[in-house]
Image 1 (cartoon, rainbow, N blue to C red):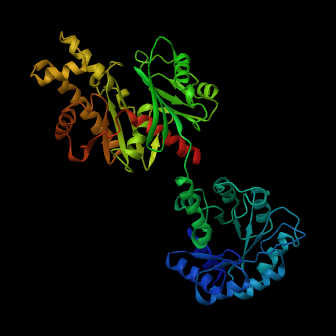
Image 2: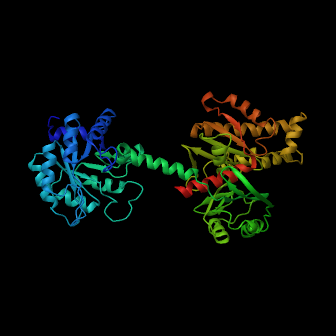
Image 3: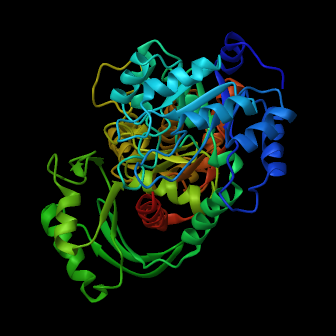
Length: 518
């Protein structure tokens, strides 16, 4: 490769991807043909530079590829923990082999050669010096020593413990302020993380193992597959609603056993938990954790009522803490509609797809799965369509739930002189009663507007509808017809929920396993 000026090297590296072509030592790809192949594949994929270990491999790559090379030498020394380009003779060898940039360990540890001497040696060859740092203090010292490039390469690798899972974006952001180009390196193993480094201020990003170490990448996938395939102890899934409480032993998408007890609002949350514990007393030792799906909202493990008239939960009740104290196992708690949304996403009508789940029964609840993740929101409210106030209304009680739920329909019926519930409204509508048709028509119109707005905001692939009202005969057809007055782009695709009352317990149990493995 023809020697490039330092300015040309900087221009090529700017805002680009550097691929570290370092095979596993003594592994099956540890030979020049593979290293050169990695380099050429990286160039074909759009890399702007390479990082290559040893003068031997630098010379082989330089002869075959015109990308600028950051050269290093790794040595295991008995007298020092410094491994990367510790000697001036290493600098000389890399320069002769064709490196455009020479990187070295710049950490504050006992070392064979001072950082400033390594910088001087690199500059004597007319090349760029890169300081591999672990801390901001390392970066400051390296900048004062005259290094041309700072790298976050060694962050997390000098303390003698396993490195953290993610990259050190804080170091990138701080070191980028020192007036030297900053190359982010170390655990940038996804495109999103590499992009985050650029947004944090990095001049370029260096990625290695995720691209050029097939043994490691294969191990990542193999371990993930093995963990997912390993049998799990069941979860004790609990669903606390306004009329009943269900407890079930859940394994995967299978309910092994269940118990159902009535919810007595007058007893209070402490007694509800005690009642569940009593009902499942014979299951002790059979579950790995407790996963609770509850009506209301969860914030940092504390429980708040959505509708105190239905389920009188004292604001801030420490649900997770109480469940952990009673059952002595790890605990997860989420809103019941959000848990059902995840259940339908994983095992039901929206399997594997982004969706909004809407349960329309006595009240109206919901959950959102976007980008394959369940949204909880800052205060646990995500998906709570029933709590949305109606546009143009100054009455704080005119929420969608108050007018389009089963309770809302019953209230509307009483307002017309008919003392009945939502089921009675449906029956009267089937008999042709005008008052019942008017109530259903109003509820459907409100829901259609709400769902159209939700489609504009979230744009899900589909909306899964469940609940005793949502799945009442003919209700989905009425709702679908009401969408005709909306612009085509705002018309959601509706499907009926598939898991029935098990959606919440299956969903929350699966969330428990997912978050335990994270």
